[in-house]
Every structure is written in structure tokens, then in C-alpha cells.
Length: 104
Image (tube, rainbow, N blue to C red; front, side, top):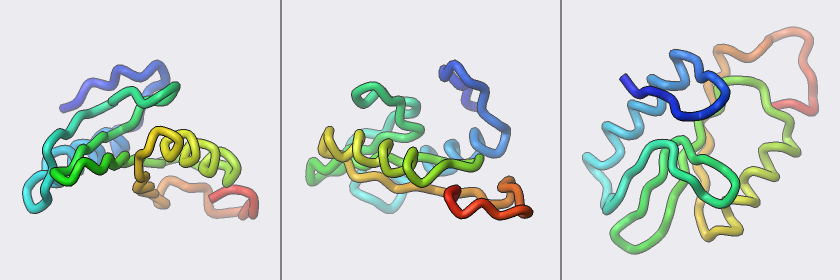
């Protein structure tokens, strides 16, 4: 199992989803490099991939609620480093009621 190096603790589900992408993404894709918890600017990407064509892709697993402004800010920070971002949401852990429109 992956040991998280991030300061805040990660849930079991977060770690398992991250492991899934790390283990399976290279199987059918042109992935040259894949890293866990890879620093990009002031952020640490859950999974970082560099493809054979040189494009860089960040996979962010979001297991808890996040404000839309925070999601957009994080995406912009990765985009500023020429990285595409794939957000993976695990909604099973999201609070169902009441719904807060400003959260995703």
C-alpha cells in the first residue's frame, strides 16, 4: 500500500483510487513516466504522468467536498505549468443533505 507523504492524512479510499491509477494507467497508454505525489509548483499531484508525446497529465483524486473556486484555482496552477488535469471525484463520501451549491 502507498504511504502518503502529504502533511494531511488521506483516507483509505483516496489511497486505493490513487493506487489504481498508478498501477493501471501505464498498461494501455503511452506513458513514459508515472510518479506518485509529484511536486508541480506549490502543489503535490496525486499522480503525475508524462506521455510519450511529451504532454504532462496530472490526476487529482478528490474524495472530500471542494469549493468550485478552489477546484478552478488548483486546475489553473497546474495549467500554468503546462499540465492537463484529470479530476476524479468519489462522491460516495460527499455529504448528501443539505446540498451546498458552491461545492462540488
